[in-house]
Amino acid sequence: MAKEILIQTGALRSRLILLGASDRNLPSRFVYGNALEQILRKTPCDVGIYRKI
Image (cartoon, rainbow, N blue to C red):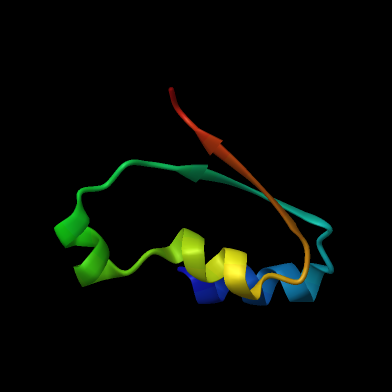
């Protein structure tokens, strides 16, 4: 998922990505990885993150 977002960001020359964050339990992060963290590390533009309170 993160790879596709980064590819589209580059292709569209986006200046901002808006993402929603959810609380997942720790074991699922190890199994699936953290896409949000991958995007934050590799994105060429600003990222806005929405997290439900």
